[in-house]
Amino acid sequence: MNNKKKDTEEVRLMKGNEAIAHAAIRCGCDGYFGYPITPQSEIMETLMELEPWNTTGMVVLQAESETASINMVYGGAGCGKKSMTSSSSPGVSLMQEGISYLAGAELPAVIVNVMRGGPGLGTIQPSQADYFQTVKGGGHGDYKMITLAPASVQEMADHTVMAFDLAFKYLTPVMILADGVIGQMMEKVVLPPFQPRLTEEEIKIKCPWATLGKPANRKPNYIYSLQLEAEEMEDLNLRLQSRYRTIEKNEVLFEEFDCEDAEYLIVAFGTSARVCQKAVEMARAQGIKAGLLRPITLFPFPTEQISHYANQTKGMLTVEMSAGQMVEDVRLAVNGRVPVEFYGRMGGIVPSPDDVFEALKKLIVK
Image (cartoon, rainbow, N blue to C red; front, side, top):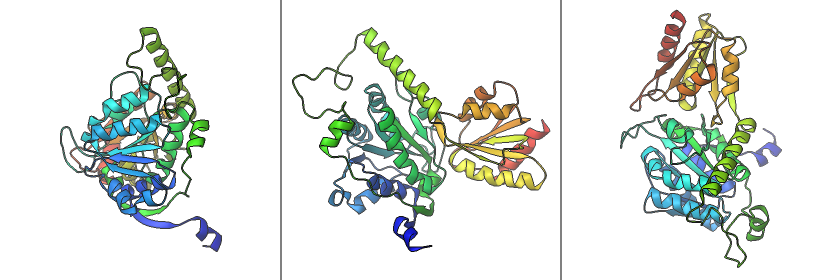
């Protein structure tokens, strides 16, 4: 490695949760508000250890509950600040009303969900069973959230920066949806460069919607209007739906492995995708032309790309650490042109490459 690269890239070994904390500070986050819950507690613990209020001025606060933390994020977002929170599955359930308010108010924010098993209190072991809760909206009303699904510690850092960029680009809350394995595992990561936080003057220019004081001529908006007339509410919804269509057109991200000549396609995200990549290698070694498509954005979902492979493959297998949720979107994309089977484990059990390979062989036999 040359000296120039040493100056620009610092390789560190850390957990996925720790990478999110470091990346949040470096990308100019103004405020983190959270509440501890396994398996994501290291995010707040790392922020407390790093004390960014002494270096960048970032506020780090443990709220009294998940409900309080999402409403603190709501307040910070309304002031044009880069605000974020993190939790795990049951904690995110408590945040759903606040997330819906953020979406309705057209405010940017970042929410991290490091998923654990459920339903209910469940287990502290990893899961991917919050797909419906996030990708389908979760809270009340017709809204969606851009949802990023990291599959490595490096992506935990990269997606933190990306989440803030997308949140401010589209004025919407963005979810980083990781499972407990990615949050807890340790890998090498190159942290993003430091970005300065916006000054108050820059916020006035770049965030004209932000509430900075109460000038006499301020017009009512969705941030603090208690109720809208039906026509105004429909206008808001139509504007949101148009924005979601734009997001679907411009922001789809996915990764492909051995898909060019694939006769059988596996679709998986997060930790499941890492397992499935090994299963694809096992299949190829035995002469089975298998490929893997990993959605990086769960919303917007790579519907068109999966639909494309329906014209090429003999069947698809969706692998999830759940009872089967993303599989519904895969089946919608395929629209009955090829069989789509599902394999999943629940309760915090991570499937093995052998498990996935056996499920793939059953699909082939059918």
